[in-house]
Length: 460
Image 1 (tube, rainbow, N blue to C red):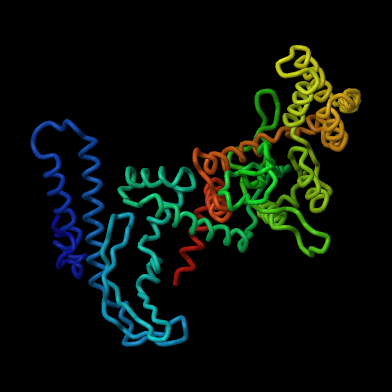
Image 2 (cartoon, one colour):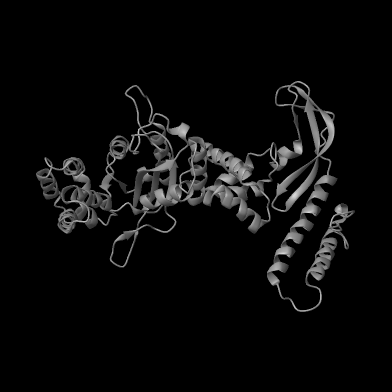
């Protein structure tokens, strides 16, 4: 398609018959070509083609305007990052993938004889140094890849934005963007406003399918003791000031923020600072003002690492074991004692659940201990309930108007990690998984825009 929109018009954009008029004439001509005379019988096809043509017209106009501007020619020599001097080597064209489609831009090029590398000042200014993607195209890739597979993202970008980006390209740039976000998350801790009287901190972990090299020598749940997954740990902070029709607290819309990674929380006696995931939790808690809330609640299952962390860093917080997790243990014991599908086993488990709901944890423990000698599951759970007894005072917690279930955390494991990283055939490196987890957490926690503004502000 010819470009009447920009040719010879760049210097007369504000005059009658200038750029605006030329674009209007071009658009009008293309609309006439698309619709023509007669009855419109396929409006979807017209919409799609009109969008493509409109983007192409504007893209060519933008390219023409930029290519006519030689202000990026900054003299015969420029300082190079290596400390040497780079000489002007003419203007060089490069095709960029942009939100307007592919654009060919001609930029001043400088080459350094000391490090044998070249660079374009304009690429740096536009935020496209060492890449063929424009910032808007990269942003689209990041948002798409945060929500669906790399293959699905490639298809969506083509269908919805007309961008031809291969799945491998999506993967490479989404993971690079995720690593940027992960670094930004460590550096930037900006407190977020919160008026809630009670804040909840939920902690949990979920397995991520990993490549063989990432689980070599690790203990796992396979029959031979090997592992196929690496655990991603998740921290969720939310408020629940609203209640449902029965008066039970429910998560306030938009209040949940997520922070996760495949990281250790284990420390050695010689360590002088918290483990990586402990630092991650503390950063998230600081952003949300968890330590300054009137009431602080930590929710989780019975994993020792959760309560060890709580004891060390938030000793005054209220600690609650997720009631549904606790009840699940009772059904496992029932199967161990009476077998799978046993009616008497189901009745036994329901009775223990009622005792738990009523705060009669001592009776639950006593019953479990009575089966400890003949059932290993009962023995282990007698210890589990005894260890967590103070965290299972559900009548007291309900009377205080507190959540006693960690559905927000379970949902985070499924939706933040599982829905994106546990799709069929996926096997991750730790680095790749952490990058996409960071990207997904930023998007789902409504922090992506803040990151993008900081990123754009850092471009020289």
